[in-house]
Image 1 (tube, rainbow, N blue to C red):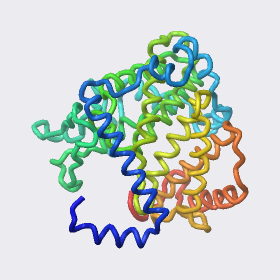
Image 2 (image 1 turned 180 degrees about the vertical axis):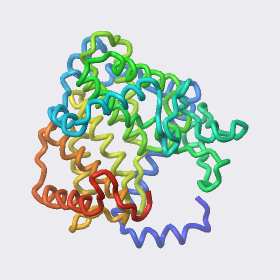
Image 3 (image 1 turned 90 degrees about the horizontal axis):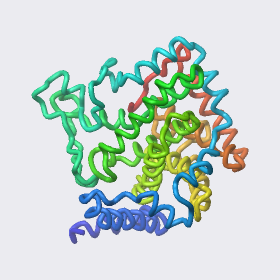
Image 4 (image 1 turned 120 degrees about the vertical axis):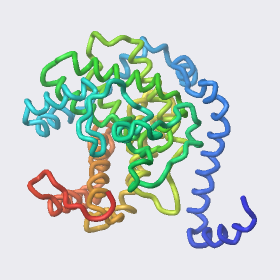
Length: 373
């Protein structure tokens, strides 16, 4: 700490109050300790826990023995959800076929069929200017990755491109198409893409461990994928063990990298909803159920802080409002699976969030853009 900044920190502490200041300091100390402890291990690619280490820590059996317990984790709401959302079966299958063949439209790139999944590249910049620096170092410790600014300059690589691809937001489409057709193309694509990501993104190294928000969203989508494909006979136990073990390490990462500042935002909500899914998924393990209950209470607290009484997100953006609504919709659904009661005040204000989305929608498929995106 620079001594010249001490008066600034004292002033900020007075503004925030003792409780919030203590929470911020505790969070930063925890993140710093995690960073210092894991830095050397990550460089040796030994930072991630193996399933053997996880089983010893929690006193559970080896993976083939424990996998049937994890397979019981199911979403009772999903069959009705995908049938309602994907009413155009032909379009659903078209999109799933594209994703299964590694064709993606990332942040306005238009659909690109990729020869190799570019987990560490701004492939938009690569196609526009092959001589430009479009790669991010996959061996850099996540705290040392530099995020370059200059979004209006197309010659500067944008880290959000590999982030967006690494969120795996296409998994729901693959899963819904598989439920409709039972075509193994979709289950194979899910397993191939996820295991390839794990192989190419060692724990805590490279751009895709920089932002906890993206880690949380990725974990949520992988858990959805497990729900869709867990009964596919062709998937090996080794593949499931690799995915589930990585998910456990995602959970440990989030516990030590909360995006908490003087104010919280949709980033912290994304951290929490990913963690809520993870602690639900691993809730049969020792002490995890307590963490799941803590996350439930924390999401309710953030709901009260971040959503105004009229049902709008405090960040003043229609797109962020949509994102926050989706996060709390996931929370609402998972509470049903966890057996948590949803308070009446939550339901009342939550309905207003959807009302506001209706007001901002044109023809049910376009949100009027106000504020940040």
